[in-house]
Image (cartoon, rainbow over all chains, first blue to last red; front, side, top):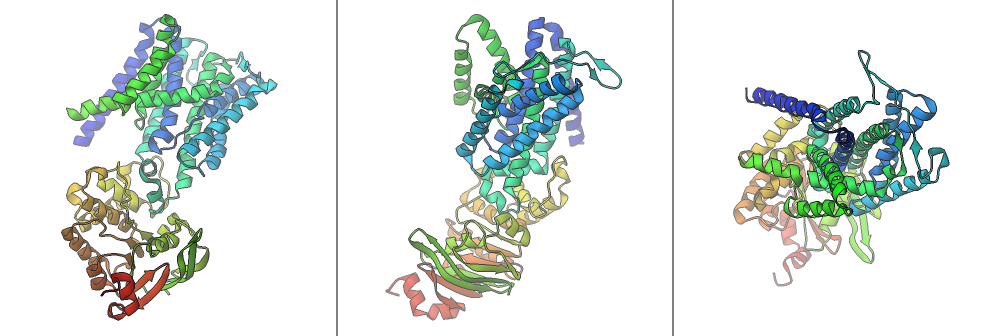
Length: 317
Length: 245
């Protein structure tokens, strides 16, 4: 009875939140509609980082590598091979996953900060390689990615319209969230939390810690790749900024401000940061100060992030 | 032979931490390893459980060579350990700590199934919670428990994999006299069911429960035998209890 009530409550909450999210584009000007799409892509990106950082305790300082590779792969497939959305997305997820596997297998030999630095180094290598590859547009990136219509059997979605793209992004984000939520609440997810809390002990319980770490790293890389692919599809370009260390740093800040280890927190953080950054930059030249101040305040006063504050309030009640 | 160590050696730089240790444990026995601090007892455990690999020597468990085997494989073979320094999952609840441990034995990956479907590990966890008297605090976050309860949980995690052989590293470390007595009772109940290799400083526990006792000093075995034999051994007395006794 109690659990049925709870699941009914869950359905209601999900329905209301999704409903509000679907109405939002009608209440905001076109510029902010575009910003919202970008924010949703970044939200999934931040959530993918949360999978490894918030749940398995593995800090990746080079997560932009998968986001960027996803974008470039989608762009290259659409421009040079096959102007159709599905194969482009499949390729983006696949290649990002392969890259995450290669970097993961190599980097998990180290722990903590050494692991983080290795991921950063590999991401920088990829960035430099792409930067100097003229076939991929060098420092300009792939410009003018064609945007074919999305064929969903029963309806065709015209992705050149911001509003249509918005709903695609919402659907993508919601499905990604549900999959990741199932994952972290599964027995597999419990092992990840165990690794985060006490990696050494987990191996004495019969778990192959390295295998678990590589698997979650690959899953995270695939979601990062898909979010990057969606981002590039929307922007119709993939450039080196998408691979850059600055973005790797920004996504960590997003996840921390939102609240690590909650999935929804990093998503919220990504949306918030994107909006604040955009609004602040219309008023100040030095808008990074606003983000920096926000970051410092959250780290000092809300160690659980903004989402942590919500759940604190709910527990107190 | 159920469990056997042959001529095990490990040096850390110039320090010979374990030198030529040989040891046999029969199935169902409880063998204690005693000796002063720094005698190499915990290093011996680390060598057996694959935390570090030995320079020389072999270890056999159930007719199989296990020298240098990683911990997760040993655990699946049925050999696991508890730790001297409490080594639990601070952020998980007591129940989750033990359920995680019993989940590990199967070795499979469960990506998208629900945690509530883990019927067998959950039942196993409940059995152990009752055994260790942790049932009433099963939903507490492990990091908030008292030291004694954390020590029980430490042992519970080791037991949850249903090991054939258990290495207990000072289960009574830092316990009050009452908790120590409760622990002795607990080890007594496990004895016979599980083969146990025990490191312990509590002499009452050691002499009350051991089938055989191994005395270590400076990395090597000084004396070995039945509790009464060890009690009568002059050298062991000197090493462990000091010259005066």
